[in-house]
Image 1 (spheres, one colour):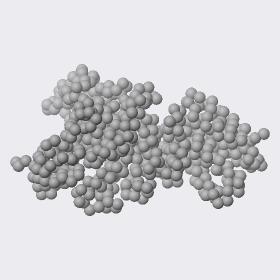
Image 2 (cartoon, one colour):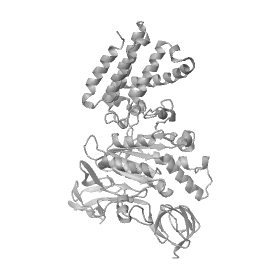
Image 3 (spheres, one colour):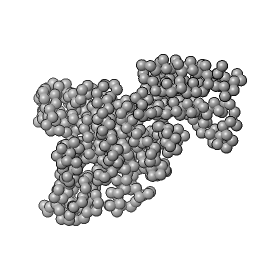
Image 4 (cartoon, helix red, strand yellow):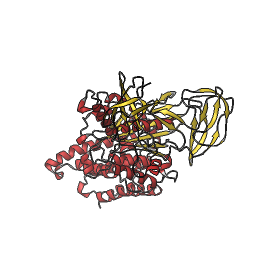
Length: 578
């Protein structure tokens, strides 16, 4: 067979012939440096390849070699705490080998082939197993059990299984047909991992951010779009969720973000301690880094890599949260590749299949019952930041997301300029998960949680209307009842939904703390309304004491929360100045 040669190079795109017998999305090695590439179009005997590495210096007539497989990732113990690039190579290992900058064509396995893991089998010889069954357990990190799963599609009777210390490639079990099973297996990142059935969401994904948990909740296994213009706090929100949200595993994807931001993420995560376990937060985190100066083709792969790793831990019965920052950079990579392929552009130059690609990606999130016996319940919650140019939510990436996501956390630049964090626009944002989470919040928060939520949203909406009127006639011209609404909205914005991401007691808010604050807000409003009805003028209300009491509750530690709540109730009861 004639060896395939490069006949054209344009940015991240290369063409080679003869490759008419290659498969779509087959992985190939491009050029003398063996750059990783993927076949994305075949026409006659010419294959178009998107190259995952920098193509500078790539010349015509250099060889292209087929690998016979699609882009795969290795799944097994050792993923937690790792820092990978967009195609699954460990960045720390590459840095140790090449220094500060990666040399073209360098490759390393995703999992360290030398590390040994203590494997404890959970099945015995003679047992019948199939895809999704757990062969045994490895303690991947302290307190984090990694279930060694039979790869999907395999089944048979266990002929032999061993206990002891093994590397990820050592054989730990053999089936009766001679199939050897190890601690790890590979999976194509663009292919969704199978499961037994999809389950309805009935438990919220606790973010620790009051504006989300109270006003716009999301279920475990839900999908969320977080659009916002430059400077609205998307990255800070994503990092706060990665640090504090209640998930067993976190997969953080830095897709096309600035290098200094990702360097800050890597530095901060290495220093953070999980408040529940007291161990490093990296014990439950996988970081996938593809910065803006890296090849655009790898951005496309990075999101699928993160989703595959999340599905793998989901199949073990864990709740996994994926935080992608940002999906706009992923879409821009599709646009650039589409332009190189000379495809017919759609709206704003994005490919016409953008909405379809995004829908298929979002639909990989969900709460499921796994394959295998016994069945396990796991979930993948998908939260994506979106960077619409100029903060225009009518642009294609935001609109394509809104068609399929279950919640929208829209960020407003004007709120960000007012130092409101999170800068969530409560008029634009929504959640389709409120009904599904109502019973849980009624049990764990308070029986009137849903009613307080609705009243708070109405208060904020009424506040916006009154501020427009006050801008024309002045605040003093408003009736006392309306001025009380403005004051209540200030309390809601500053002390209820506003949080300080750098305060140790305010960066994360428990459900109990959120409920106490919203309950206090409405005790204040009811007390103020009663005072006004009794003829007490608005000017006589002791509002500074009330604000101070709310501030104390907001920044209180859990062990002092109850006392601060009692102090706030007393301040509200004495609100009328003597």
